[in-house]
Image 1 (tube, rainbow, N blue to C red):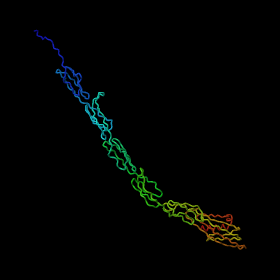
Image 2 (image 1 turned 60 degrees about the horizontal axis):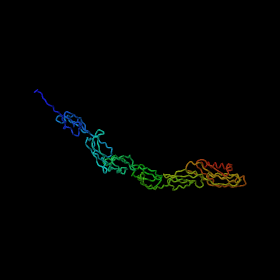
Image 3 (image 1 turned 90 degrees about the horizontal axis):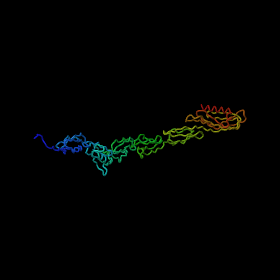
Amino acid sequence: ASGSFSGTLPTCVANQCTEGIPVDSDVSPEAACSSLTTGQTCTVQCADGYTGSSSTFTCSSSGALVGDRPVCSELICPDLTSAVTGVAHSCEGVGFGDKCSVGCDAGYRLQTGSSAQDWWCNWDDVAGEVALEGTWPECEALLCTDNFPSSDRFTDNCTGVATAEVCVVACAAGYEGESEVLSCSGTGSLEGTFPTCAPAACPAGSGSAQVETTCAGVTLGSSCFAVCAEGYTGDAEEWTCGLDGDSLTLLGTAPACDPLPCLYNVPIGVQYEHDCLGVGTGGNCTVWCAEHWGGIAENFTCRADGGFEGDLPFCVLITSTWTSSTRTATSTTLSSTSATVSTTSATSSTSVTSSTGTSTRTSATRTSTTQTSTTSSSTRSSSTTSSSSTATAVTVATIEGSMQLSASDPEAFVADPDVRAAVAETVAGLAG
């Protein structure tokens, strides 16, 4: 009746929100969001492995959380970096929660008992970021089978080379050029450039005095000829530049070369004797002074041009001996035609031996003049006793230069003026 309400107010308790809590995998509501009552709020953020802005949710009177759901996107794992040889994978740009495959690269195969592996982009609680996780497969390299050197110009160590390995290709024996390195690719083929190998030249060889060749600069597989040198005779032989083991050499038989006899410059002259007939190229012979001639022998050599070479010996004619009988008168007779000196000596029973010599040799040609022996007799009117004298040949060899005489009794020979005059006239006549 007083116009006011009377009674007891009810006891009201806020309702708990049980609906509208985000439960998707990319969001992570706070734990408080599950126990909010009307009017209370909580924060909803992106879950681990996702990125995005957080949102605030409010517990409404209807018993549901109300708010804008955050926009979350998955994080991307770093690309997989393989430290294992021969492994290949598809692990680039893998997002959180996704997987990729890891297997063997081209040129490799899985070992027995091994298999390709799946790797996942997971959240790393320790690092606080996403990372790829998984197990490496076991791979082995395959051998290369294609593009091997096949020419006999090459030598290599490529047999058994496997993927990612290298080998060397070089020029074979008998060829020359720079070596090259080839690699075994994942396709099973050797890759690289083969060397440029050209045939090498054989050593020319020293030959011999009897053999000459046309082999200078001849290369592997080519031929040349070995022929007899000048002054020799024989059939030519064909030689080939080839290999003796690993060494490049000229292969063939040496020609059989016989020396040709020398036919020119054979020593000629009555004062010489020799054994040069039939002596061939490179051979030696001896030239000596003939009988009744004196001198030192000389050696001659047969040259390749067919002529002898050497110095002729210096030969001096050896003269005969004459003797005169006891005289009682002196008479001198000089015959200019025979160039013979005949004389009787003023000394009783004197024996004189004379000989002539020749001058120094100035050329290989000598001339000689031989005087014949004469017998003369003479008498002098003032003497009652007659005598005769007999002179044997006084032989003189004349060449350019001076003449030298020797006697067994030089004093008696020189003391006789008639003898000296006769000798002087004889020399003058022979020189003229």
